[in-house]
Length: 139
Image 1 (cartoon, rainbow, N blue to C red):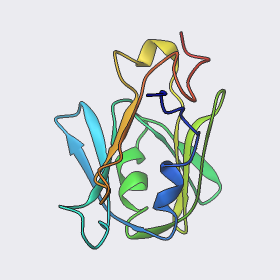
Image 2: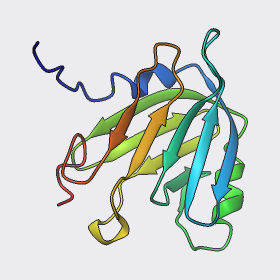
Image 3: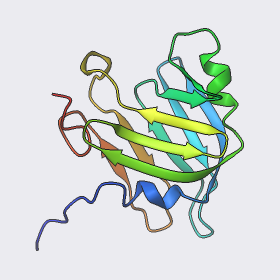
């Protein structure tokens, strides 16, 4: 059986048109972005970001630990995904009608994994790690 090759943005782009309804900070360790689930899925679609994403909104960018960062991230909800992208050198980009989430950490910000996307009806999922898909520049 041949190995399935990864196609950048193929899974991530399935978020287009879906509402992000929740931002959850988990023990000041990582953040979960929750999206409306697919009709026959077991629950919501969840993007766990194990690095602090950059928030772009209202003509500026916020980074953790800047004052207002958590508020800027929360203000993205409820927002509908209008486009997504992922590529080496830029990482993951999720553009909502309320602002943008960018996940492209520096090497010293990553421990093991960068992000994980789960919750699709067909059980498709993805884990991004430094030196691998769309993060080959981080090694």
